[in-house]
Length: 136
Image 1: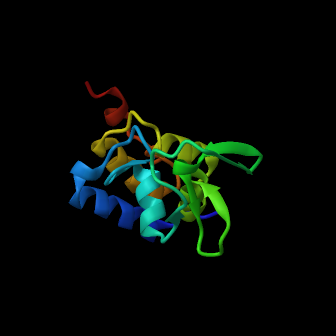
Image 2: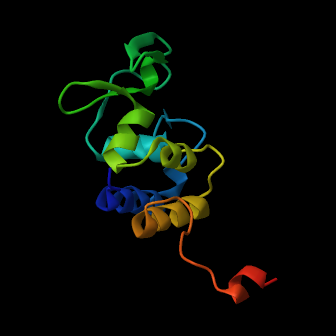
């Protein structure tokens, strides 16, 4: 699976344009979204219910989810928003878990998106010089 650099940069650009609409602690709430939530919106997925709807839906990929966190793809398939975003962005499960973590700041997201586009990982995989490693 290769990283969808165009979509990663599009989502990051949207978030940087409207940082007040980023809330990494929830998939979506009103007009705010996390990275996965914005990915779903910008990729054209349709939310199947209001963000506060806690009706159980599924099984989807073998699990039950709150309806407010489920999206329908253009083909009509239902996904939990994190799985939809992971696939849309071309991420491994590990990279998606790291990118979608609730503790990420705007700075963290910016760095991870750059690293994903440059190296295919959420961390900087470029070789370090001795000076960089030992610098205070």
